[in-house]
Length: 96
Image 1 (cartoon, rainbow, N blue to C red):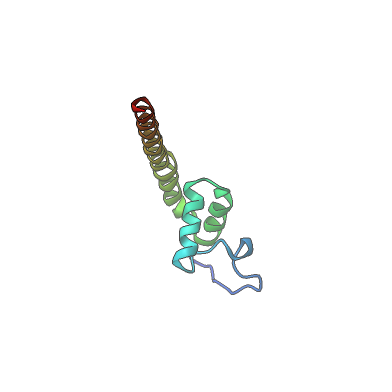
Image 2: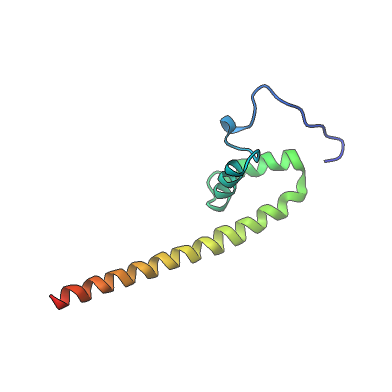
């Protein structure tokens, strides 16, 4: 935000270095943490303090689309696949 200066700290990145967007893997881990809602409030507060309130829209979009929509679609696909496999197993047992 305007009027703020980024400075290097002695402690490095928050949460023992796990919370950062320094490389693709760390950013992917943070995004996965946000989508699964695993302690996402801490990540939100860190981004809010560093970048300002305009990133609220990003978090809202990822929470609603990623957590509530995408995760439920994946669970539905897994459930349907499990039902298919169970049905195939029952048919195979009936043939024997």
